Length: 585
Image (cartoon, rainbow, N blue to C red; front, side, top):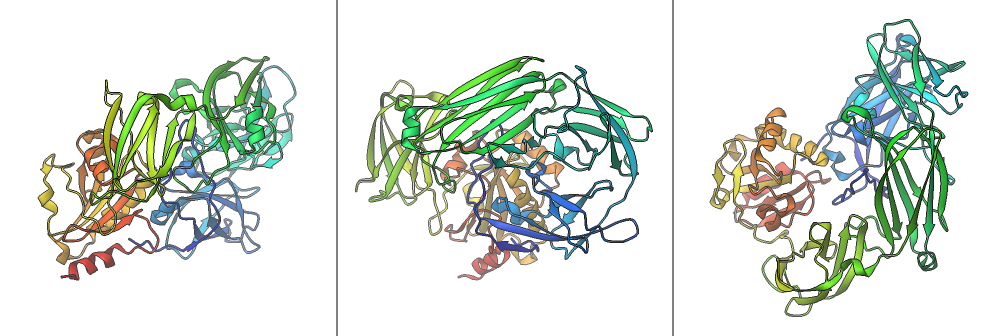
């Protein structure tokens, strides 16, 4: 499926982005660049050369670009988006914030395929915000009020902030959409659009981690809006590298996430400190607001981030929760230790049979078994070459239940996860390489989401079938599904009863899936549910070896897989491929 947008290949490596409390395993990364042009003008139609823009995919506001891109002398911004996953190719639009000194910020929707988008900035009205410390101490020069309105709120509230420099690593300060003009004595004047009736203030962390949100404020009021900053506490963070890790020399970098709880169930505010690369440890103090915090620390060894299942020699990852009181210092000390093999050592033995999709032994292939849990990314358990009979014996494994997982990987493809039958110390398990191009598509039994009726495997016989495995909770799945629905709506008449365009959801509940589909009016696509509600462990997902979503397959009329990949793969023309399969005898 193609979208008319200006896309070209970019071979720069894309940094692995980790969200707080979760690791996103991104499948099939293909570095790409999105380019669109903005023409920024003032109320009189004159160019605004001092303007700059930052964007996010319309379907994923949390992926807001941290780097503001400036206009040239003609007020033109040639915006290039680089840090992005491959599903950017399916993004129909981007939300772009444009700002300039002396002007109110504005949020514009850029539809991909447009040659250029005109953005109008207005000087608007001025609102006055006075900031004052609760303890009476002078306001730090680094503290700034960050104004956001209802339209830009979704780009702010779940955003991860970070201070401008940590151990010499430059990062962007947390200015967001407006340029506050200091007037002295804690008073700031901020431009705001004439049509805005309210606004919020977030206190920028700048050189500290002081975070606070206030509002909504009445934008029509001519009075000063007061923001009182509570007395701060101090967080002393120290990472100690063990002698063994330092001697090994493989520890590459740390990443920290500091999250502060907010009242009323609001999303936690966070500060991200990433890509810290100390030689022998790390120690820093931060000024923080009083409150309850969660700190996640991750220590990574050298590895190839482009592999889905990287093997790490040293790693530590954990989360702590604590309370910081005003006027007090809380010290957090964490040691970076090598992986402890006792984590996965026990008395169980797994006898594994590794087969191809056709059921033949995978003889001669190199395999690895890795262990993962909440504090271990990918510890190497064992590795070797599959013998002629496809059978391997793994001894001394510990049954970690839900707290850990053993993954069997061949050529960066996960064959499966070792499962421990209750009460059995020695057990057999068969794993197959996921079916790929040239293999027969396995039969699956699914449920029609909208009708609630079961769909038997013979429904697909003799038809060209396109299956998009997805989930409602998967952000990268939404763009491809929206495009697939539009594609289905416009399909040619001669495809009727000859082509099946379907989504196969691994959601845990059919009711949630049905509401999501109807809310988005995605009813031109056939929607199937894998029925048992076990996510990636559903029978349908396991039959096709689905370990990441979205994943799509195109199957010919003889039931043979003709294509498998990401639904937003560059250069893949679904209409053309379907026509070719229909024309084949």
